Amino acid sequence: MIGAHRVALAAPDDFDGWRDAARALAEAGVPPTAIVWDVAGAEPDLFGAPAEAAPPPAGGASFAVPRDFIALAKAAICHSDAERFALLYALLLKLRSNRRALEDRADPLVDRLERLAKEVRRDAHKMHAFVRFREVEADGETRFVAWFEPDHHIVRREAGFFVRRFANMRWSILTPEVSIHWDGATLSEGPGATRRDAPDGDPVEETWKTYYASIFNPARVKVKAMLKEMPKKYWANMPETALVPSLLAGAQAREAAMIATSRSQEESAMPRRTPTPDRVPSPGGGGNLAAAWAALKQDALGCTRCHLYKCATQTVFGEGALDARILFVGEQPGDQEDLAGRPFVGPAGEVFNAALEEAGIDRSATYVTNAVKHFKFVQRGKRRIHQSPDAGEISACRWWIEQERELIRPPLTVALGATAARSLFGKIMAIGKNRGVPHSLPDGGEGWITVHPSFLLRLPDEAARRDERRKFVDDLKRIRERAEALAA
Image (cartoon, rainbow, N blue to C red; front, side, top):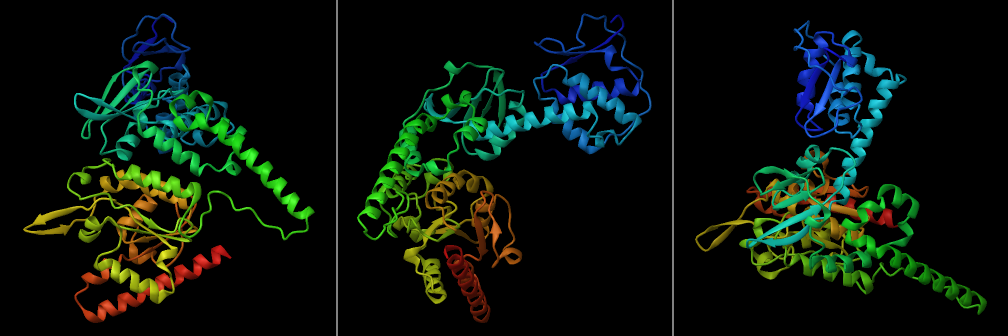
C-alpha cells in the first residue's frame, strides 16, 4: 500500500474527524483500498496494513449526501467493527455517483451498515435501561456512580441522555473505555475504569429490593425473553436481579397452593372462590402492596433529587386508594399542602373536591399526587408565592411518579394542568388542544388531560369562572365514564 492515505482519528467514535477526511478523499476520488484509518490508541482497521502516508488529496467537485446517510454514519461509526470507517467511505463513494444508493436495501454494503447501526442503537437502549447509579460520599459531597460495559463505542453518544435525565444530580458513569462525569453544569471525560472502581451498593438498595419484591409480578416474566433483552453481563449492576430466582420460585409455590385449594373446594362442592393476587389490595390498601407503597413514601421523604427540598417544609407524597381506577396528577404542593404534608388540601383542593363530587367521583376511591413533590416558591414578606417548576425539576421528580403508577397501575391517569401533562407525556402538551380525550402514555397506559383546579381560581371574571368550571366538571364526568368502561 505504498502511497496510501493515512487518516488519524482522535477516538473510536470520531465522526467529525472521519467526515472531514472522507469528504476530501471522496472529492478527490481516492478509492477505499488506498486509505488507512487509524484510531488513536487502537489497532488499524481491515485496510490498516503498514503504509506510507501519501500527500493530502487535492479537492475536487463538492457533492451533497442524503440526510439519512448522516444519521446512519453517526450510529454505525460507534460500532466496534474495525471495518466501519472503510465501509462507510465505500458507501459515500456510491452516493457520490448515485444519490439514491442508500435506498437499495438489497445492497450488501447498505444492509451491513444498517445492521451495524441497529446494533449500536440496541446497545444504547441497554445503557439507558441498565445503568444503575449508587450513592457515594466524597469530600463532603454526594455523588452517584454507575458501572457499565457497553458492547460498542456509545458512551459519548449517549451522555446527553443522562444529562437530560439526571440534570440535577452529580454523577459519573464508569466504563472500560472512557468515563463521563456531570457536576450539574459541565460534562467532562476521564480515562476508562474497572469494575473495582465503582461502588458495590448503597443503603437505598435495601429499600429498592423491598419495593421490587412487593411489585414483582411473575405472570409477566418470560425467562427467555428476559435473558435476550437483559443478558447476564448486566446483572451484577442491578440489585433487583439477584431476587428474581427466589421470587419466581416463591411464585410457583404460591401458584401450586392456590391450585390445590381450588381443587379442594370443587371436590367438597363448596362455592368456588377466586384467589385474590397479593398485589390487589382493598380500597384502603393492604398486604404487600401497602408495604411497598409505605417503603416508597419513606424513601421519598428523604428525596434530594433537585434543590427544591432545601426550602420546602417536607416532601408531599401521593395518597389515596392503592387499587384506584383513576390516578390524578397535579403540579406541585402549594403553601398549605407543604405545611400539611398532603396533596390538594388548600383552596385548589376545595375546588377539586367539589368538582369531583359533582362529577360523581369519590375522591377516596382515587389516588391523588403531584408531578413535583416539593413546594417551589419565592418569599415576599411573610407570604410564600407559588412558582411553577421548570423542566429540570419536573424531570428530576418524574421517577417518583413512575414508581407510584407502577405500584397502582391505574387504568386511567389524569394530568391536571400543563406541568402534570409534561411529566406524564415527557413533552409539552397544549391543554386546550388535548383536553377531554384519551391519549396513549409512553408506557402504554391511558392518559387524560384537563385544567388544574387552581386555573379556575385565577380567572378574574365570574362568568368565565362558571363556564370553565362547567367544562372542568364535564371533563371529570367523561373521565369517570371512561374509567367505568375500562373496568367493565
